[in-house]
Length: 305
Image 1: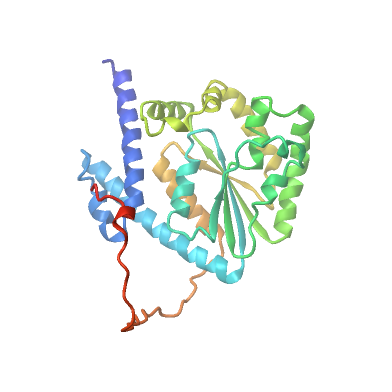
Image 2: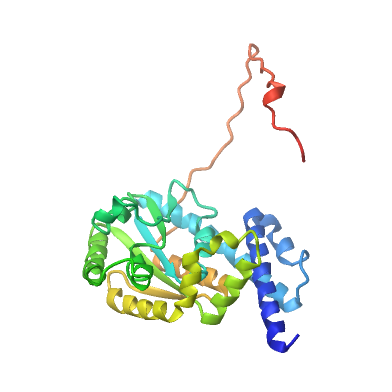
């Protein structure tokens, strides 16, 4: 195997290892994060173990701050919208998962809209997005947003030139209107290199659990890399406004990108810790006339494990 092939295999292995870490994160609690983060399940160098411990430690610390932010949003009636845009496999879904992982879904929810149906195509372009905007005390994360028109719709020919130009006339005014109404709007673009996207696509191709993430549209976007680059540059130039500026997250290192994005988001928010009353467990009541009925055996799930 030549050195280039060896490097490619190593990077694909690293991608698969990162996927394992993602699954571990969903099961971790603070009390055992350090033990698992040491990497006993994997063959890691000392440098990798150190970096992994730092990642988990900072992730849990930042998630703790996100809980404080959530409490502040509820207490103050703040309204927050966060847009996540970027190329396929840039890491948008990963950071969204880490932000929402420990938050109340009634407070913080994700809007990931599918392609518009026949009825929605006849509506005002922003109409289907407006229905997902937050009320007081809510956070909405858009996993892709109205900027689909400036990206995939433009590159793939799903909109006309007139619709494209109208979008750039309307989007800044729409966003200024949201801000004037009291909604804080934060826009992130996740940026990855050509080579890094190639590696992540290969990792998905070789992982049966991830293959569903690769749609024909994703593969076509790979072929049209340069067209997407041009569309992104125009989008950033024409929609970067003082009321709602774009923030670019460097995403080639997915773990650093997550930490940097969450840290930056928290820095944008004027939140403070909300003091809650002490929670006390009430005593369970016991009644002499209460008798618990047995559960019918036929409706019990078999204990296979």
